[in-house]
Amino acid sequence: MNQTAEKFGYPQTLIHEYEHWLVLLRQQQVTLGSLVLVCKDAATRFSDVSQGAFTELHDVIGAIERALGAAYHYDKINYLMLMMVDPDVHYHVIPRYEQPREFQSVEVRDQGWPGPPALAAFVELGADEEQALIASLRAAWR
Image (tube, rainbow, N blue to C red):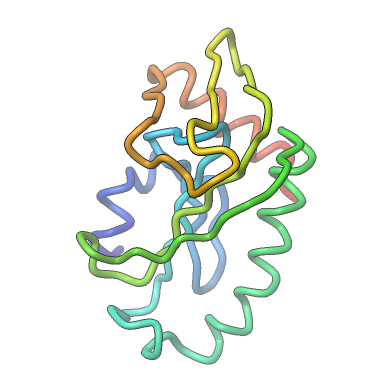
């Protein structure tokens, strides 16, 4: 697997795997249900992503939005392709919430609402909470 996926905890943080994409839990929860969507292609530029990955991305995005909507009822969603530190093509998927959300007695506030996400303001979950959040998202996947 590529180094970006490994940096974001693959395979421990894996929620769902597709032919061309990995959906991983973002260990630094900017908002509840923050994810990282990593392309499995050997691509460090968006223009190098295969046609198959582009085509599959449509279904992946639909599944992400259905699962996050069912599990946590987000108000908006942001897809950030930053790729400044981690070289492989990937997105940070940040569900946005006007009101705080709670998961296993951990309150997660969207510190940037209604502006851009505040990536430096995040919650680090404990190992048990992280695994419970992964299980919750896997259960919402369809």
